[in-house]
Length: 421
Ligand code: ADP
Image (cartoon, rainbow, N blue to C red; front, side):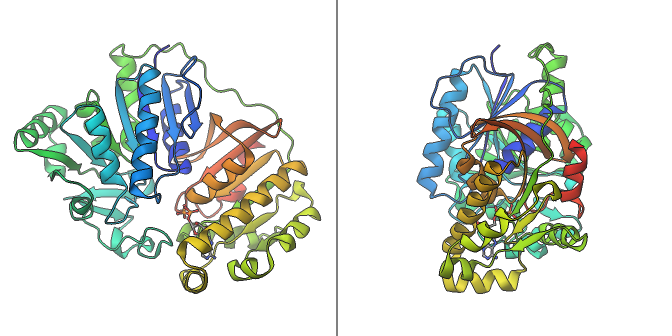
């Protein structure tokens, strides 16, 4: 089997989100954490490589992405998808634009599209402006993100300082006229020298049109949702045969640990909901961790009954996050929390946890790394874009779910457990 679509995601939850949506088609989806050191053997129709490059130095993000591209080409892929956050998480330096330009160069292509829209999760784009629910991006809670605060809602303005070539827009009025019109608009833009095209989308129907118009582009970029229609399109035209097996769900012990390092508005609600049910919970304070280390929480964890699915969280409101960052620096506060939650993940696994729920994109990257997980099979979906996955860690089979900050509803932590019940 040759890989039909080679996908690269800039963080781990983004990769599981994308893999989950592709897996809705029933086609086998394999998710690899980092670029595999071995060349591809028995690649899946859809291969997703998860990087941890969203907030890396630009040069590192570009180098890592190029290595991922090389591996996916070796797996047989001729079409590629660059996945970033549906809230376009980036800074004026990158990494969305520089990585896209590097991929375009390696694929020898003059144009790509940018469509972070995810209507099921309330992300829509109109006239190049990104909305989170009913709010423009820059008025949404994303304006306070610890690592990539988003202070503009206009995707063209956000992308321009990140790239060297021209940025343009295919707006909703064009998209609404169908794949053929969109295709010729993209061709016209290309003739005008526009290499980077933001594409409006406010509903799943728009994404279908965009996917249909762009399915044979060497490179598409966006959130996960615009990739969702691709499996059906490739199945319909025979690019992909439907005989690949689905991931099967193993039976696992009930012992569970929940680790939350996301400070998004939704994760704050999820933590509040879960603790209000009387679940055992430990709140991490980055300042206390910097002073006294992680022993206190590890001692607490050692005493817990994992069948009660305890929660350990650093999740806090924007004021507390700012206070910690002022003392420790943005990266310093992030690293100390990520290291602590990762140590808790390993301790919980060694104590018998076979179901691990993680909230936060960067947090998930750190936790999976510490657990030594390198490949995941995609399983049942908990919330749009958040599947359970099955993998191996420390010689045990475990179920792992990695939720990016704003995903899921308030009851996510209990929903996830019920899905496996
Ligand atoms: P999200 O998916 O919501 O963006 P991430 O895990 O990607 O979540 O990013 C949140 C970042 O904030 C992580 O680096 C995390 O370690 C850091 N962090 C978590 N809690 C705190 C806190 N209380 N103070 C400062 N930084 C924090």
